[in-house]
Structures are given as C-alpha cells and as structure tokens.
Image (cartoon, rainbow, N blue to C red; front, side, top):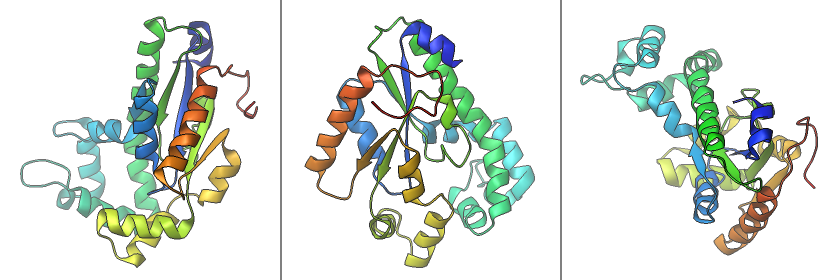
Length: 222
C-alpha cells in the first residue's frame, strides 16, 4: 500500500524492529494488548516457505534437498546452519523470502486502511531485518527494541539453546543494535524490568496513535 493511501485513510503504519533477542515479540504483544493492530513478519516468512509454495521450491533449488524434510517441510535448523555461516547464502535466502513478506505487510496495511479506521488509528508490523533490507521508508515511523549486546547473547543462548559462539554469529549477521537505535523514531530499552519496558511501550503507543505521518521518512519523532 502506498504511503499516500495510508495518509488518506488516516492509518499510521509503524515498524517495530531491533536485534535478535532484544524483546521485539514481548513489545509486539504489549502493543496488541493496548488495542493496536499488529502483524509479525516472521509469520509471513513462514508462510512464504510452506509446503507446496514457490518459495519452498526456490529454497530447495538454491540450497539442495537436505534443507527439506521427508514430509516436504522446510528443515529450519539445517537451513540456519547454512545461512548463518555464509553471508551470500543468507542474502540468497532473503531474496527469496523478503519480497513475499513485504507484499503481505503491504496487503495487511491496505486491508486495515480500507476498513476506514479513525484518523488517530495506528498499526505496527514487527520486521526484524527492516534496516538490513532497506525498507524503513515503507513505514511512517520506526520503533526499535534494544538491550545491551551481552544481554542479547545471554537471551539467545537461553531461548534457542545455542552455544555462545553460535549466538554471537547470529547477532553479528545483523546491523549492530546501536546503529539501529540511531535510526529509530522511538526506542524501547528492554534492558530493565518488564515494568520499565511496559512503561516505555505505553508511552510510545500513546504517541503513535496521534502521530502525523511526514512527507519524508527522514523526519524524527515529535
């Protein structure tokens, strides 16, 4: 959906991004609980490679049959071992999956706009690789969830059962979190307690609901 269409509808479409294991999912759940429509790009990325899709066929053609299970599903662990060890492989995977993801986000935003929301309405899409894929300009505002890099390592090891070396490798595959902070309209620091994180989310939710989209994405938060 084009930005001008969003402005005509009154819908503010924001992106929530950050680094791996910086608490984006928690933030998205909180925004949803506050009544803001949300979408998760990871869900769309999984749709892109479901059995029988052109996306899965393209992945198999690029990475070989070893990344597809006997029942025709993507072997995510096998694929992850390849793409996090090879920058070119990761870019090839992104070229297969990301066009579908952004098309789905655009369609989701368009559907919301066509419902005729009030001028103060906002929606948020969780897009982990927003800056890496060059799509920040698709959105009216960008929210970054951030924590200390060492917390990312600890959280990722605990969440996914990774070794420290593997966790650091996956974090290094993304832009440094401090770079993402500087590009954000709003930052949620998730380094502290849930209560501290909730306070920041609630404040940003209030601002986003009354946010006036700029004509250019270079404008900063009010």
